[in-house]
Length: 64
Image (cartoon, rainbow, N blue to C red; front, side):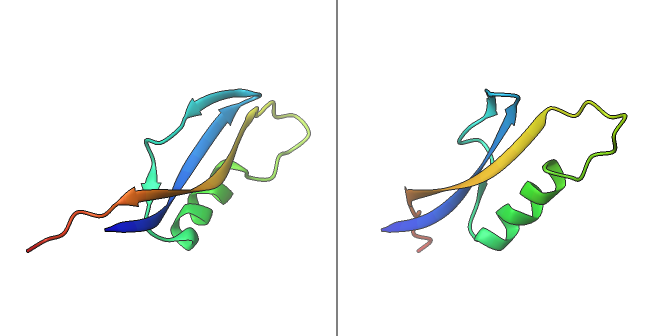
C-alpha cells in the first residue's frame, strides 16, 4: 500500500547533506525539525545550514 511521508532535506549552503535518510510520517514532525535547522541567526554567527520538507510516496509495510 502506498502512503505519503515527509523527507527532511538538510543543505550546507547549496550542497545536500541528507536526502531520504530522515523520513517522517507527518508534516508537523518534519516541520518541527526543519525549524530547528532554520533557526534565526545573530549577526556574528556564520551558520550555513538550511532545511526543507519534501513529500515522498513510499510503500507502507503491512503489519499482519
